[in-house]
Length: 432
Image (cartoon, rainbow, N blue to C red):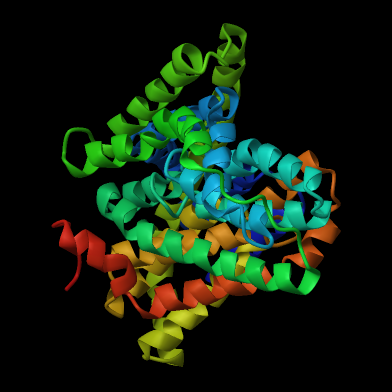
């Protein structure tokens, strides 16, 4: 009963329009007052401090900064041009370009919102000028942006790794194959839609002489993923240090190489990156005492017992967890879900033998799908704003793509080798 009251009160506050961080703080302090008394409320301050001082969390502001610098410094348009060169010739080619560009951009920014807001502007403009409907362009831009935090680097993976005490490098490796599968699944849907709607074909691929200027212009930008991931996996830099390298590299390219980044832009980018970082860190700070009170009241153990009383079959428990996460994603912001669900669900996953790295990919993929499911899908609002297409129209066209992403989620959930073979291959410790 106590568990139900806590979760119900939290959902009511969020649905009532209370900011997520404030709602978490109110519930945490209120529960502490009732459960442990006012004399121990000082614990909340300690937990807030402890929850925000993890070293890996320093990667968050720098990955956000790197994404914003790329969007302003001319890198996104050149990435789009390379994707167009590779897959833009088939029927519905710009739809495939949209997905491939998001996959390439994912290896640089680690943020779905940065993809939707920056690369999305280029994608939607190009698709509309080529005769695609605004609704199709907006829908595909929204769903393809979900690949961003799955293919490394990834801000949600950094947060999860910090919370679960799991190697961020292992999580980055585990996300590569699932991210590619997401892209292929979305491309398959684009191919079907292109045939049914008789979408236009792109121009024939130009010869090498004309293609080389496009590739050479984008080559410095395309070197960022090998720079980031190579540094991490060779041990030269930590994921946190790699985020700093990514931001510095994006600044140098935009300012000195492409010469599209003005000093006035830098000040605005730093301000916007700081604002976005504050939003994320405020949620993390408020969620720390919330997670502590959940554990102190042994709520994860109670939920574990309740779920195991329904079934001891791992496949059924995983199905229940995925359904719960997908429903939460319709109403609650992704980072909040990650932080709220982690202390409750991870003990359950460990009990049934699910590797924490594997579960990290499962939970992050769930919250990425939540970014494009109404009524609270953040990427829906971002894409609707830049495309001026109503959210209702985007949502009505999104279901085939959502089904494709859910299918990938099912495959990832029940075939753990897809996520774990690469970390194992490169020597990261995971459950055998």
